[in-house]
Length: 76
Image (cartoon, rainbow, N blue to C red; front, side, top):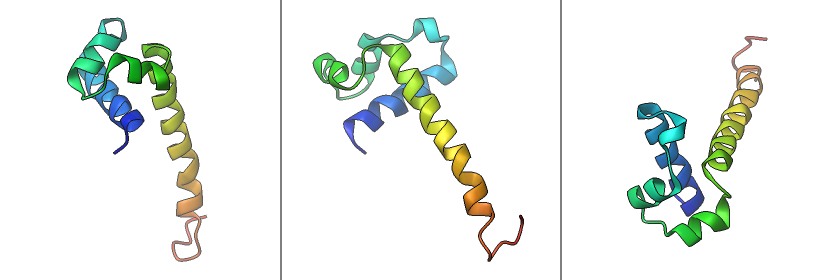
């Protein structure tokens, strides 16, 4: 797993247990082996991480019809 993915994974873990307003860059970096300067090379702030996680989820959902509609499944 790359650095960006590690940040997003840690964000999702924290988001399941905390309110978004309680998640901080300092906290994310303290829970992963990522320096704050490295964090900022990928994201501007925690809102940026949330947006990236949401984008990944939407992309994953968009792939579902493609996977289900393959001829071997005949569900379309």
